[in-house]
Length: 573
Image (cartoon, rainbow, N blue to C red):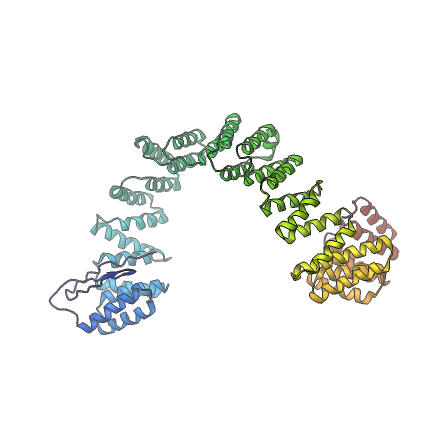
């Protein structure tokens, strides 16, 4: 709450102070001329204190005001300003004490009463005191409306709606009836179930308003009120009126369309949206944003039932803005959500081609294809050209994933070796992790021990740079167990991952498998059981490992059960 320092008129006709207004300094001297004048020293201290307060030096100002109070305990102005200092420092209880003292010394001072009421109004047990003060101000200063703004709120909190309405009416008498006061009165009536009175109030207001007097946002407010009450037809009338104003909001047509949707008037709904999307004067980003909102609020089954209409809307939007990136990405999102994948890919690809200097557009295209695991003919070319043009590591990562997932192992190894020579430690660690996997894959394909050794060296590089890297610890441990080499070290690394992620089914499986290979099937079983409880049943390899362990323990029935579960799952990527 901002308080404006006003003239403070003291009943003791003994003071006059002047403070000049200059630049940021707005100092107000108060005080009526009387038979006596403050001593010059006291006057100087007061001026200095007010100056410090005006500059936000509240603590220093408070010290001066307290000194003045010590000299003159009846100095109500110093109590007032001292309260303002405490209030500005958020010492509300101390501020209240000072304001109460100022008011007790001069109970007829408007500003003392007003600020004291304001502080009372935020207290849990002092709101009634605030009302008493404000009501007294309303009687004594009938032409001032400040009190009524706070009064109607306090009345409303107490449920005294008629008094609250009367306070708002007094404000209207001073400033005129306006949409804000109409909203307040409507909400007050609605809060006590007198909605019909509220609707009558709205109708009376906009029926009597001169043409062009009501702004678009005010008509929108009326439409929202009617819409929330289920009065869709009246809501649409208000929105149509909003369109007729001098500066209609660009969102009104979308609101009208939503009104038709809520009423089940679907032909009018699509017709309105087509008109919106075909309008080339509307910023394309705005149309794209509202299309996304449209898709978000309608039922999925409605889209499915009217797929041709939505396809037509999408085509209308892109035809009106064929080169806008936001529109093309929005269209791609729509096509993807409706499983029209070819159209989705075509949209993000067109966006990339139309904006060749925008690195984000190429990245969107490649990322989209990667997520779909759909490899267009130009994927590798676009990724390589983007790497050369934009120097972003994200393109290298996508290219490496493309090579890896398409069994281009040698190309992937070459790429990650290049990335391992970079300066970014996170990228280097990621590259070595990927190389470790790829070299182990080559070992399994060829049986060449040199590839296994290269894999181990890559993981050693990762752990040298990041000893807590759980991905390297887990993979390195598992690969050692596959080779049945250095199993104690493998177990130590595996258990280390479980201190970080004790419920990770993959890490639990690795620990269990190492113990199984070490001939400790009973110990391994506990880890496999926990892996099953943590989601391991969704992983084919984990199920097979558990089944092997159970078989080694002689539990053939349960082992066969898990073997069958594993057969029902696809091979993991």
